[in-house]
Image (cartoon, rainbow, N blue to C red; front, side):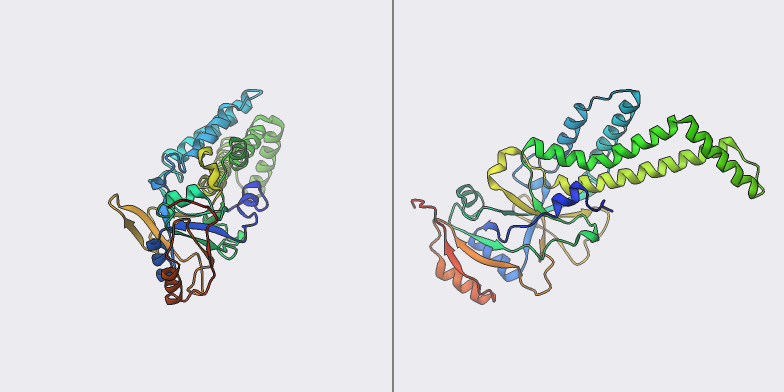
Length: 326
């Protein structure tokens, strides 16, 4: 459904770093390796309270600054605004219709804040993943994405505007057509000729109704394109306060009213946080892990080596370079 070569597609298909890092505890390491799966957590339960809905704020901010030059542009801007509000309130962007599950990685191999927050206060490990084979091919046009997070306002406005552009341009084109008496009159004459050839009596009212139906259909399709792009990039818009993490993420979308298929929805912890265990689309039965790094306070190299051997992973182990006092 995506528009090939568009800015959203280009952003979501940029080159993935050779290694992105997933910080976790020793218990998490054991679970990942033994199950050959990583947990993708429901976006509503991440540590960023603006997760996913942040894209709506960016879109509305862009539309607030949109300055129409005439009444026609004002109408177009209003159509787009209503579309965005509807999508997030009750449409495909709402939690009642779509759930987003996120598996997070960092482009930084050895970051103290990541060790502290996600790796048992620096006693855990970080796993290097090669995600080159994880990204779905562009031609599949599905809402499973692998890409970096956007943090600065300029970055987010640029990509959100690109997602809105198809609906903006389509609305403007339809409005220009409706406002052109010459074009409408020409199409009416063509319609009347075709009707007479078919032995029918041409009706101006029928023609106008047909045009309204076609415009509604075209506008609905444009909204689907824009919603699809918004859905894909919303999972990659993050608050600037998390910029240090340089996060890359796998985002999996699921329509609430459709079954998950072979993937099971699970819950963890006292708060019953929803998640899905993903094998990252691997056929080999083994995750694309290339290295293990011990946290600054991790002294369990022997245990980790045994876990790797027991689960069939023959990969190097290295030590964090952060000189953290125990």
